[in-house]
Length: 263
Image 1 (tube, rainbow, N blue to C red):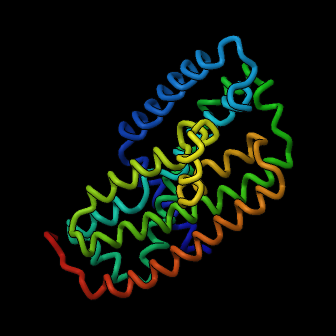
Image 2 (cartoon, rainbow, N blue to C red; image 1 turned 180 degrees about the vertical axis):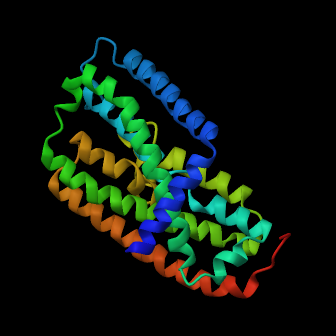
Image 3 (cartoon, helix red, strand yellow; image 1 turned 135 degrees about the horizontal axis):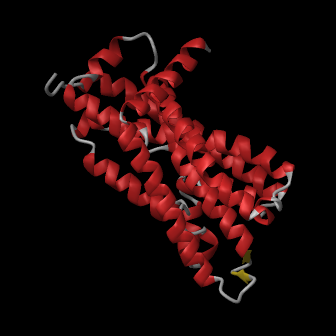
């Protein structure tokens, strides 16, 4: 446990090294929040519900999405790709720690710091609009937390798998852009999948991305009943197990193909 805490601490320290970049990231998220609130306020003008979702629920969705986005971060795939190209990946391979665990724990440190600071920024809004937060019972939070833990695990494994693909492609730029496009569109990050056309929504529901954002957020919104929550968590665990096994297979083959560029 101590080594994991140490890795999380390293991630926090590395994030604070570039404080200007960190502050810009938080500011960008706050700016995005202001824009989203303005858009949803215009959509809900004069309406109590849109597509069975109330205004309070969509505000909860917006706040929690941005917090979850900062917690999950950009992913370890970009960092693995950069280390591969620079040759720094060798140092990571020589350590006794599992490569995926090392990168994931450091990314968790960054995410916890970002989410905590953003939460502090959101506190004035939550106090001013306490009627929005007060509608969330404790039971939802208790179910939301494990869903977020599995969400982070799934996202970390997916990112590690994409990072390992750099051992074949020798560049992670295209893979990173493809991943971000898929996450932005298919996860319900910005727009709940409830608002999607039925065919597109059905397609999104069979992909792992909705288990990362949309499913945990439906819990805190109160849009999922106990049966749906149980099915959603089982689906998360299924994706985690499947991608984990695939990662182990890819990891073994990747070590045979490593070619250091630079260093």
